[in-house]
Length: 249
Image (cartoon, rainbow, N blue to C red; front, side, top):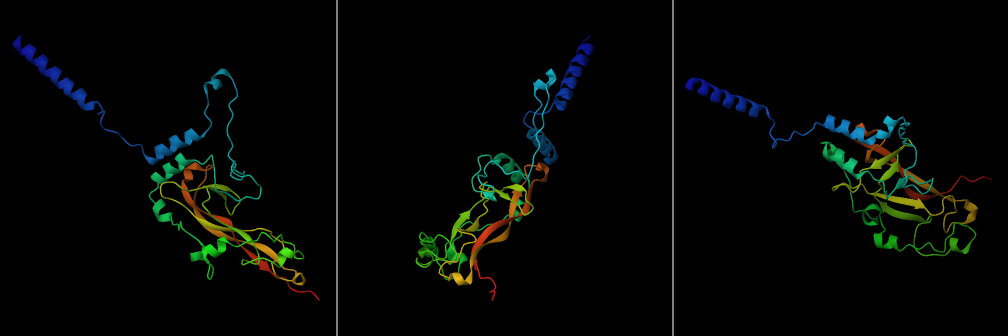
């Protein structure tokens, strides 16, 4: 009898120890793989099929058009947005966290001005250029009078775009103001594109033309989420120059 009781006690202890070893510890957290998190993230971006589908109602799906202007665009001629109320900050943070190459892809000079971008002109001088009398008309008084400045007046901005139109005509989200990541660019746009150049006689038939340059920026495509963060190419206005055409006699 004693042997039977001893055998039952030993069996109970062994069975308890075995079940305890198979039970997952509450202190151990298994971090999902990048593939698992991408799959979960992709599912969250699709329109959810609500319980209404089970009642026979039609389920609609969202079509993402990368060529359609985002809500931040107010003018059809705009190619970038500096402010974006729909900026996907959480999504961008996620891909920055799980992309070990972001640091190697990233580069920026956040503090830019005429002091380090224009020879012979200081940022203070450029700030005080006054074109209030100029209206683009070669025969008006404002074409001949006025203070220091460029012969083709322009608006100069130092922007940190949050969305931009790439060289292929597709809109991208720009990695901007996330953690310490910024991407700064000097934008110079003609005040009167196609107008006569300031202080030059009308007989020369001059005109102010807009110039552009291609910039490389870290981007994110909300229409191709698994692609993550990548470098894309964008055309931004860089200068307003005076063009003198060939003369005809």
